Image (cartoon, rainbow, N blue to C red; front, side):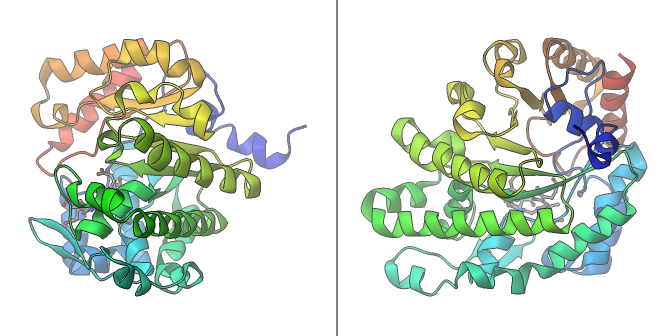
Length: 351
Ligand code: CP3
């Protein structure tokens, strides 16, 4: 029996795809759809001051979340925040260096770990984010799905250990080898924090949650099982126990062959594919287990032209036999041309 809420939600195409329905036209949204390629984002960000002030200002964070919805009519909005707010809420120092990226105080020893705060305290810092979610649920069009998110424990740990982004996640791999007790304690703290953070986003109104494991590709074999699959399974099962109706999207970026079986092992409802994955291969080996999301290369948003249209159509066609949410394979970049986003949407919706 379906209650009224479910009947309403079934008009939302993203939720239908996540429930396993094959739609004639895939719903579409874009990673980093609120971002620096949009002049209206740059204006609001200037008004907020720096990036973190924007994240923690519910009115302005809701405003930038809504901007790409107004401009393009995407089928989903993603909460405007960052995966590094959770480490900050756990007690790490966090700041952003313009043109370079994030910086954090590092966790490399038991003493560093002991300085972190308990999971119960994260909401003191993260309350403004839940307020952004509540504003968005009031202001979004009724057909637009609101996606909440967090970083996966491994990806978040790589930033907390190194104190910054790294090309090969070397410091995190080193800690895993040299001080597994601290590494495992950190992973456990982040995992528990992520469950509570996502649960609070759902309580505030997030209709779907996505777990970003941007650096999953640097984990191989046993390490992939232990630090990518297992945390994703633990987070998903904890959320499903409390919120069985809330779909979860997993994004083990650059997982390669390990995309096979990811949904089955972890329980996620949808697997987001990066653009190194061949769409025909993924239709056969990944989409057999349920919904997939992706996977146009972000560079087409810069380069445009017929290639953009051809590649978009090829991806839509490859995934047309099963549930699919159209997206990029990674976030749109600041040098993208906003007109190319419209061309992509037209190619998806107009054929
Ligand atoms: O997708 C969205 O529009 C929602 C908001 C969102 C942001 N970051 C906003 C943001 C999401 C979902 C993220 C996730 C995120 N943040 C990830 C995982 C996804 C991925 O890209 O791999 C990671 C690794 C981060 C950490 C992070 N945040 C980095 C490394 C940087 C610096 C790089 C950069 O693009 O400048 C950020 C900053 C950031 N997060 C920006 C935005 C819009 C740019 C900040 C600005 O306006 O100056």
